Image (cartoon, rainbow over all chains, first blue to last red; front, top):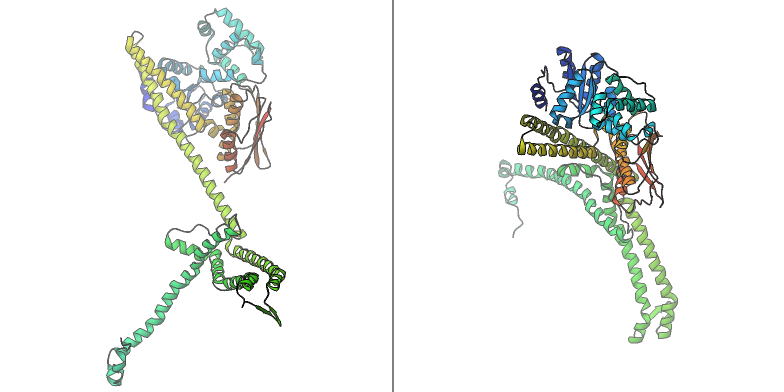
Length: 204
Length: 407
């Protein structure tokens, strides 16, 4: 698995400075090589539970500006929430392992996270949105607005949302304004903050 | 055949005798006798003691005549091998009680029984006196100075005196049997302490089974996660790279690689569901509340959650609780057509108490299906309890109570 990922990243022109087998070695390697991005699995030795995720959270705390991309076997919002909880400065990503198979998308996500963006797996976002709250302000959203919200939560910019939904930029901006108003969120153009705002609302 | 020992003729000549080997042979013979006897005793005493064991087993079986429910075996499990068996049995009080019983069985009990049965036999013979008086004219019975020798007198005697006496004797024999059974039970049944030990042994072996079962689930989950799942991810990656190499105009080969890629994705999704069914990783990492929350996220019916736990119970309790909730929720969705499900949980006086309530059709019967019964069994294994209230028309409420700590 590690060797496969190294090959994949190198075939997209990245340099892999270290590939390690457990959470402790990961912390050490980051201290030594100061990479642009750390890619880790939620589950890692020695504990075989969420060691990798905890290491990622610790790294975000210890190295401001470090981008962290966490791979998971499960689209569990609890893991995403844990990762996004502390507001680090660097990019952050939470992706299902299945996504590695979509090599181009995966490579794209790596670049975006390294550039400081927030990338959340569409499955996790879908789960957050599909969560049938017994009564919540999400009910006030129109279906189209929910679609826009989902794409926002994945970290897409307005232009990308417009392309995906085949509408104009102005329409997207209007939807976003409505969503922020209905959810009581302060509007903003910064993609990263926007995602975090949406996710922190959804997590409640 | 002569019984004479070759010693005798030799002893007639004392000097020659004393100079020969014979005195030494005599000495050797005399010395070995007590040794043999001691060795014999060493073998015989335990054997005699142990005679009670098979007798006890047989007698407990015979006791079913008067104790149809049966009398439990008082003996505990033995150590390995013949030596282990012997060591355990000789140290058990039950073995010595069985020996005591066996001694009584060989002495007092048969005597008492034979006397009782003999009295009954005499009574039965006396009952037939009228018949003998009729068929044999010499038959007669002397009672003091009175002689019974006519049919009328014989009938009067039989019915008036012997019959009540027979009934009395028969009744007395039953009392004797009952007393003997009580005596046998007293010596052959397990004592309170032995019953307690058996219960403890059972509880311990059950705990071991639960722990082994739980460890096995985790092992399977880990094997799937670290093995098959990773390989499928790698396969997906290789196929993704292959598709990229082939480019968009690869024709048939591109289609085939695309199909393979889709199949790998499906297999990965399938295996993920399977792993979640075995033991959700979230349950291990974040505990019950998070795992149930994830359940709610995947549930097609709105779920309200109110799980307030200040700490985490033992992992066996956690996973049993999770599977009860998971099963109850899927029942509500699948069978009861519920539109709203509430899951609440808290720690209450050393118990983890969870309630799953739905507004569905109700009418769930634990006795009818294996599903709810299986959940009840799972709870019972941990000394827990499952209560299902489901009147027809709803609402259905499933409550599970588990001891916070187990094992």
